Image (tube, rainbow, N blue to C red; front, side, top):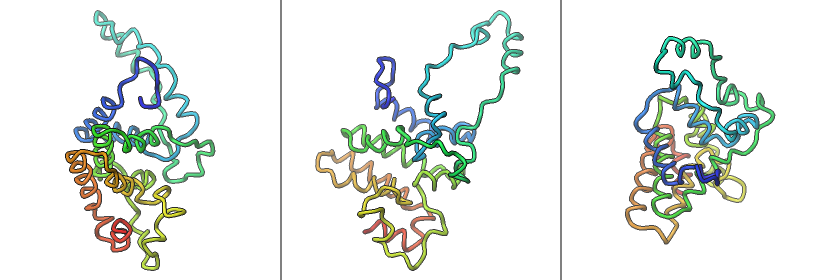
Length: 222
């Protein structure tokens, strides 16, 4: 909702709270993977973004037709199955040529710069998704730059070389974790916010694919 300025959109605080509840209380792969993909993948198919931002269609009459439940069941059963949210783009990024920057991911990262409750909720959402293994496939988490691939810890890579161009966090395999660490550089946060962000950082860092590999640990420490 942070990309929607209409009066009917949820507040940023409510949106982040509901996302956190979803990622911490649900273990349905069919629900978690599409939402996590839409929220955290760096790019999305242009058609998908247009579809998500379009006005929601009206609910079918069968949803409120309590007097004739059989008709509703027939109508639902004849509905075509929904198309996959991301498709094969995780395994083959080139399979989606019309990729555009994901505004929902940008909004989530921007929320880390918000006031205390916004920054704390955004950090908690990122931590919740990163800790969803094995409910979410590792390919999604690596594509979202939450966790690194196990093969990406060459002994020849110095910690400074693991950072993006100019030493930034963008395009780094641990971009989300490094962005959380940057939140601690802020001087305007309350103690409880810092405590929440620190807990989120520790929980993500303690994922075996990070803490068990010296080079990833060195990249975070630097």
